[in-house]
Amino acid sequence: MQVFVYKNAEEVARAAATVFAAEIFKKPDCVLGLATGSTPVPLYKELARMNHEGLIDFSRVRTYNLDEYVGLDPAHVCSYRRFMNENLFDHINIDKANTHVPCGIGADHEADAKAYDAAVEAAGGIDLQLLGIGHNGHIGFNEPNDVFVYPTNVITLTQSTIDANARFFDSADDVPRQAISLGVGGIMNARRVVLLATGEGKAKAIRDSIKGNIDPKVPASILRAHQNVQFFLDEGAASLL
Ligand code: PGA
Image (cartoon, rainbow, N blue to C red; front, side, top):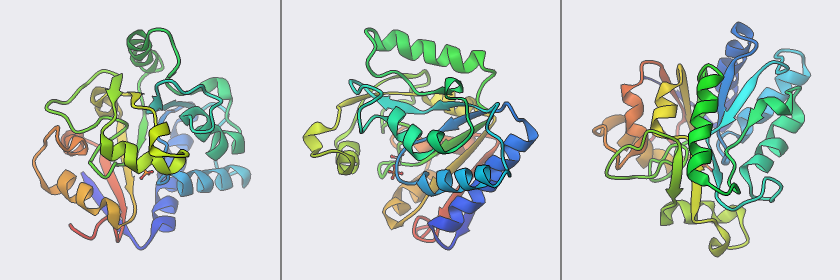
């Protein structure tokens, strides 16, 4: 594991963007694992800028997002499909047919979750997985648990996550209680993982992930068993290391 500390969120975004650009340059049809939330937004802006300037070409890139809320239509203003379109896909030359977000409105979520893992595998696996981290140490929507859950699965969100994500909704009551998330296995199978964390609010989760034991109560701690993982932190997120 490597840990890089930058002055602020903008510098984190610029550094992470170079990693994504290099991956796309090396393998133009690479498979990117993408994330939602506030943290990756500056990275997505930087990637869009680089795309406009002709520095990176997304025309053959394929993407698989980590997660989606159960019950939200892709067009819903808070769905992760819509988030990805508005924050990245609408601003780069990617073929939307090559972008994938778990379906939260299917008739059989368990079957959809299984199919998502199969689709990632059929695509050749994830070359570069982007992660944020929850205040409780979650990655994707893999919440603190007694065991690591490896396949993509339906997750019941913890109160901490509901409270953290309430800012995107009219109220905490409107936050869906469940989500479909790529499992810990899907994340660990990625050939390379880049985790971004910015702000002091993430300092405890980062410290517990990097300094504590590998423990399903801190899901991101499993990344220490990954062969090729980098944490890109700002000074706030690194402040307890
Ligand atoms: P955030 O979410 O980037 O909005 O803080 C990260 C996460 O919950 O994984």
